[in-house]
Structure formats: C-alpha cells, structure tokens
Image (tube, rainbow, N blue to C red; front, top):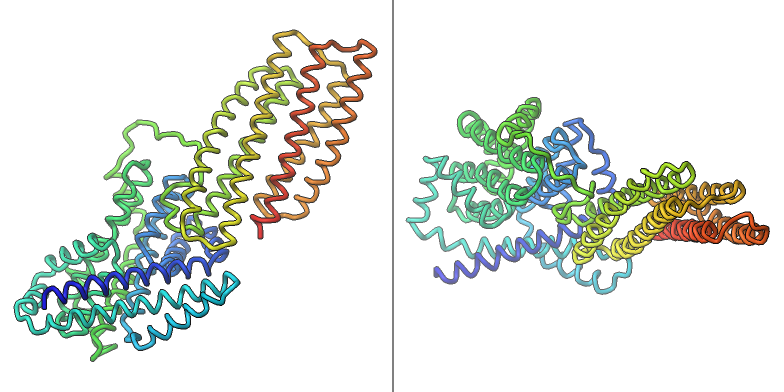
Length: 539
C-alpha cells in the first residue's frame, strides 16, 4: 500500500504542478498587452501596488514568480522598495486564487476541458484560440492531478499513526508552521501545498485545526524562492526579498497568537460541511487580513529590511542596464516589455554619443570625444547584455507574435550598436583632424551641419517610434532618410567643386567625406529601426 500511495501522490502532484504551469502560461499569453499596462501602473501608491500584485499573481499563478520578478525589477532599478512592498503583499493575496479553484470538486469536468482544449489546439490558427486551448488543457490536467492525489491519499484514513500525527499538529501550531514551511520549500509552490492539504482534508485525515498552522508555514516557505533568487543582487533587491519574509513571519505570529480561532469560526460558519472550502477560505482570509493589518505600517517593513541589510558605505555596482534582469524572465510577457525599454535606453545612449561627437567637431570641444568613447563602451556592453537576455527569452514559452517581436529586437539592437560605431568613428575623425591641423571652409561646415541636423531628427523619430509605436514618426524618419541621401550627393558634389578651386586640402577632404558617409549610414540605420519598430514591435 505504501508504494502505491507514494506513486499515486507523486503522479498526482506532478500532474497538478504541470497543469498549473500550463494554465498559468496560457493566462499570461492571453493577458498580453493588458499585463503590460498593469505593470505600467506601478506608482509609489501602496494600494495600487497591492492591486498590481494580486492581478499579476492571479494571471501567472505563482506568488513566487511574482516576488522573484519584483526582486529583478528592484535589482534593475525599475522599482523602488516602497513600490515593491505593495506588490509583494498583493502577491500573497493573488496566490489564494489557485487554492480557491482547487477547493471546488470539479474533477468530473477535467477530461472534458482537456478534450476540448486539445481539439482547439489542433485546429487553432490564431494565438487567442491557442491561448484559450492552453488554459483549458492546464485546467483539466490540474484537476486530474487533484483527483489522483485524493485517491492516493485515501488509504491514509486507515492508518491510526498518521491520523494521530495530524491531530498532534492541532495542539502544536509551531510544529504545523514548520511542516508547512518544509513542504512548500521542497515543492517550491504554496499552491501545491494547499492542494495536498485539501486532498488530505477531503479524505477525513486532516482536521482544520491542524491545517491552519500548516497554511501559515506555506506562506513562509514560499519566501525561500525569492531569498535564493536575491543572492548576488544589489542591496535593495536583497531587501525586497527580506520584506517578503518579514511580512509573512509577522503575519504568522499575529495569527497564531491572536486570530486563528476567529478565522476558524468564520470559515466554519460559511461552509459547515466542506472542509476543502474551509481550508481555501482560511488561506484567503489570512492573506487579505494580513495585508490590511500591515499595509499602513509598510514603511516599517522597509526600515526593518534596511536594518537587516544596512548601507555600509560601499558603492553599489554600477550597471549598464536599467530595465532587464534575468529574474524577470520568470514572466516572459513582462520580460519582453523590459527588453524593449532597455533597447530604448541603449538608443538614447547612442544618441548622446552621436551628439557629443558632432559637438566636438563643430565647436572644437575635443574633451567631448572622450564622452563618446566612454558611451561606446557602455553601448557595446548593452548590446551584449540585451542580446543574451533576448536569447534567454526566446527559449521561453512565448506566443508567436512575441517571438516575432524578439526577432525584431535582435535586429534593432544590432542596428543601434552600429549607429554607435559611426558616432565613435566621427569622434575619431575629429581627433584625427585636430592632430593633422586640418581646417574646413564655411560652406563645408554648413553642409555638414545641415546634414547632421536632419540625421539627428531621423534618430529622434526612430526612438519615438520605438518607444510609442507612432507610425507618423516612422514615416517622417523614412522621408528624412530620403532627403539625407540627396544631401549626401550634394555634399560630395560641393566637395569636388571646392577641391577643383583648391579651397580645401586632401586631408580635410578625407575627414569631410568620412563624416558625410557616417551621417548617411546613421540616418539609414535610424530609418531601419523606425520601420521595424512600427511594423513589428508596436503591433
């Protein structure tokens, strides 16, 4: 019997976890742009942060993934600790949705859901239908796993020692908390722990009094994922993980000492004969009440985290990236938004590099070339880190249209880096001209300034198209690129005329033509970035 029970539990648990993952992936893909907008609402308003945490966790079906993502955002510098507190609290509430779902006896509908989902997946051509099919398949597999668990755990009713052990937990809540912590730590999923508790309770093995402290331990156990993820991150990212742990530990202590009996009386009154619903409702009430109690004092959680991980005077590692972090890859749809933002950050860096190079040339302000060279190092670092990030993202389960965007970003990042190369080339030409003592006629400088102004406008429009998806900006960039091609031809013609009149030297002519060529290439690459941005990324 023991072997059969173990095999049944492992099989049921495996199906449960897999079904939850499949359903979560489907929900995340279906949410798509909506999830992006939810993340953009993040403000210093703690209440909004709680709502964001609830919705995101409800979609991706994992408070651990949400908290790890928050650690990633904080580490990337996108989110402040004051914002992180609310989202972390909301994640605890959002994770109760799965517990509520599995507390209903829907196993009879599971095969129907899987059958319909597989059929839709086979005939579907649109992403929306595929996502819906994936949600149905995940839902069905989750409940098939739940049914396996219940059947596998049924024989435990006949084992007196096991029943006595469960009753013993009722009299020692701190031992129950430890059991819940270890269970969630091993499974890395509080939802799976809740599923096991509901399965045990449905077989009459686990009384509510024993289940409640285990529930509290589940909430602490789910903190371990973020704690492990924060290793090697900056101080604030580690503080975010600490806040998650402290929040749950304080909540557990409060409820064990003061609020367990009132909660149990409440949920038993709601569902007197359904212990599965009682467990799910206890989980939900505990997390909502914990948020309501601690939210007004969230600033204290930040202070505690800063006391545990203080500033010691050492400088934080300055990173080239601002928006991407490997932890955000846990949620691919949000990771894609971070990749787009980081690409924009790279484009702005390239623009500054280009501006410094041209100002150094026109104003003979040669120290500015050093800034261009420094920015080029940063841009090259950004190219590598964004490319590595996109490779990792492309290996995740993402929708077809998201994969197209990832491919487009590969091209944009490469083109933006090449713009940086041309900016660096202009800075080098400026220094070469200084060393050789070359001088340019007023006409030559005026032509270059006109071409530079239009090229910078093209680059600005490309960044706007990438950032906002503004089609008009993209069309204007393409139109300007055509004008710049004509200007290039006019510049070359003017240079030949000046050479024939012996108004300029061969040395100045070489520098002049090289800068003209770089400006034309920058405008061409900028137009390409704009075109891809509106044709693919903004769709």
